[in-house]
Image (cartoon, rainbow, N blue to C red; front, side, top):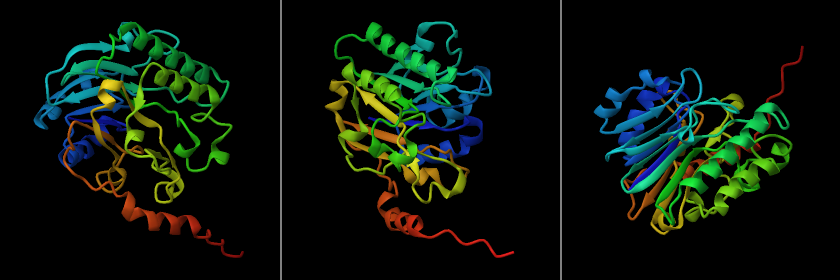
Length: 289
């Protein structure tokens, strides 16, 4: 069973890219974030033609989460089972049972700047997620919480800790919020198979950051012990972050349970020398006036 998570940064704009990637990686379950669609605009028919059933929780121009699965989807929960309300009346969580695993697609708030109302709302949202997990989990339930957490848990998850510290995504409070989720018995599935640094899931579109690997690992799949014991592979598909159709600024992350899924070349090994050369290159001097 291959579970994937991907912030697509607009499902409408990225539908062709999604179709390409589903054929490439052949996941069984996909957790999507930032669909930027209302529920009545979600492309159910198109997704069904690709071989998946979809549940979607969205509000329109912003946010939006979804679950795609090759097997039936049941027991759907949106927004922690509550109406959209303060502190964040935004579509950022959907959960369902599929393939014997309770999956949760989450899109954590960005936070914008430390100490801002948006930052405090981000921490409140993580607190609500933790409480919902505590309230609803039954024993060592097969559970996978995946999505864009907008938090890099460790310094090795960012391209330059010194440059990043003092901003969101790496603050002590945000990292503590993710650590609390792990304290509930959840394991970082990617790190079970990859311990190396400089493997990121997000790069800014600007300044050639992707090609210099100036990024962050902010997309994660956290799993319970019973699921962690089944993880045989994990990967971040760097190749999906480039080329046509126009990519998202995030790369998909896959986690394989029980046996490896369809093989694909994520592109990290081939890119290593090119990334080093681009980082070492001196910026061109501006012509003299």
